[in-house]
Image 1 (cartoon, rainbow over the protein chains, first blue to last red):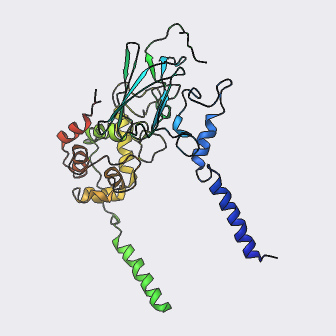
Image 2: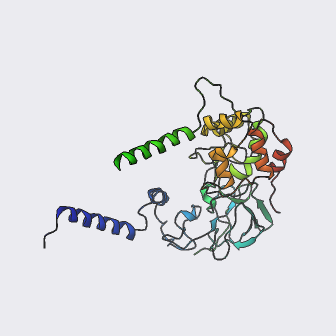
Image 3: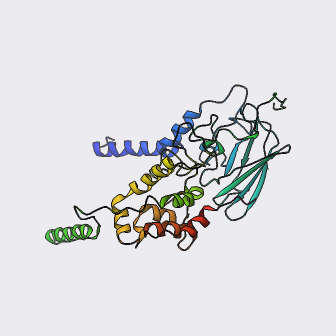
Length: 177
Length: 167
């Protein structure tokens, strides 16, 4: 059976629409671009709790393609950001007074699932590690990714990476696989 | 029927024109006080100016503060105080969003400040990712609205700026 040209056009649009709906990235070019700019996985570190230390977790972990997180980030040992702070305790307190505590893994990463804790902004953060305490002076108001603001190099738009010890020192042996 | 529709459309269009507020040609702009702005920015700082909100360079309302986005390339968030240049840049940012509406609000001694988008968003009456930041009657809202009314409530601004971590 031959289709009229208008029906062919309609069918073509339906196919395009169907592909768009099926594709998770379609419709949000900003998110796609943000994901692309993160680059690929590091060699030897497969996707999982230890991957992409220091990157803004919620760019992907927003529930559209990866497990959703409400708050997530990486804590570094020293000011240079070269090593992770494993087993650091991250204390969270939100605008309603609800609190939550989570520990970092051997990569310095921590993540919170919305089912466990979904903060009502503003969110206040305090981190403890082996006698050191760092308190974030300003609240978080909208973005649960620490690295959305805490980029590797300090500058006018970032205080730099989150660290526990405010000076450089000898590397510490880590047991991360 | 066609004529009726045309008349209805024209009437609606005219209503639209009549309802929009405009400054009279040649009228002087009435902007809120620049001198009184620093306490207002200090009150907005913990609520609006963090790096994940209006401390982002991509925002139309871009606020520069000591704990958020810095104006000088050599400054870093969290160090020092908000500089005069940062107060100036933030003032221009707030005033420059809707200068005509702001002039009308200030000219009316701050009456109906919700004509301003930034106030509607702050109060959450217009879509705002950061949610409700200003509640009518709270210190931050009093601070902003009193500034728009040209009678700054410094106590309200000081209370609003005094936001401390819960520990």
